[in-house]
Length: 486
Image (cartoon, rainbow, N blue to C red; front, side, top):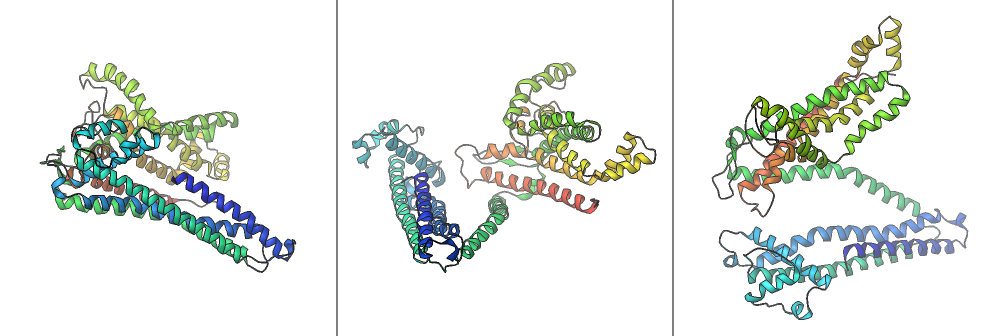
């Protein structure tokens, strides 16, 4: 049984149990709900909880552990002699999983004949025919060992899925039976349901914390593995980025940090003045009708996918800057440049600065405005000398949050700035950022034991520390200088 089908079956069991147990509770009270300790709804909800929640938790844990167990079992069945030269066990397991997915797809879609499905020992000369039937393209390094291991992978996956289905359904039925048997007029169903709901709320509130801890630990462990193979001084202080998966790589982060900060600086030069001025106009000058139209129109920019901004940079902004600025002035002849990515990224960040600044400016009490105007100040003087100083901590926090967003951007940089890692002040030259290199180092079939791949985790941890630092600075500034108004 597939996972979506199993989920639907569990929901059906829970819903059926809700009505059955609810009816049992009413019957125990002679049909009068006033004789029950709790409302009938709580009795039915208790049955739904016992039927579904333990089964769902078990299924989630099972689905997390099952691939790990299958990978371990299949990997142990492959001898070291079966791994071809120039490959690794990790790469071979990647091929095995792709073949197994192809076999499963072929069986599900009826593309494989019964004879082929029963033939679990295919000769090496028939490997190409089998791969053609299941629609899997693995290149020229497919061996009989890979196909046999893929068949074992698929069989173990099917077997574990069957066991999971039986265990989960048994647990759901047992939970429903337990809830049914303990239901009577004196059972405190409301207390049980509310305690369970409180536990669910506590668990939900800790998900963000647990996710953050998991991300940090995963980055930290792989970064430690990287620095065991590559010098940390060369990584942080080298000005050369030249990865080579055959060895002898130069993995200095300085060119990537320079490109990241350069592009982000240009983006903020665009976003901060435009966004801040737009916020001041909308909050202090615009009428209610214009504000109701202009503010949503600006915020539409925040809903545009970044890939669309990247295409805009690639097709429109880049060629325009090249043809009318870079080539005539002799600064370059490429459409991919720091300025291209920075301008487009700045446009993307305008609604972040504008919306946050607008909310902060509107939070300044009207009494400050009235007092300033009453003392004879003009509206512009009131904005410059009263409103902006009062809202400045929040505005600085909004700018730092926009900077964090700029540092983590990828698609605009890929399409607008190129992938060249270099140290240069020329804004019309192609450069790249940390996020782009993280993607490139993890793309394709790579050996996760090599420093050229593990460097992506070191880059990710560095980027995480940078954005975390900006967010912390923003929070400190807002909390330290925030004015409390009544």
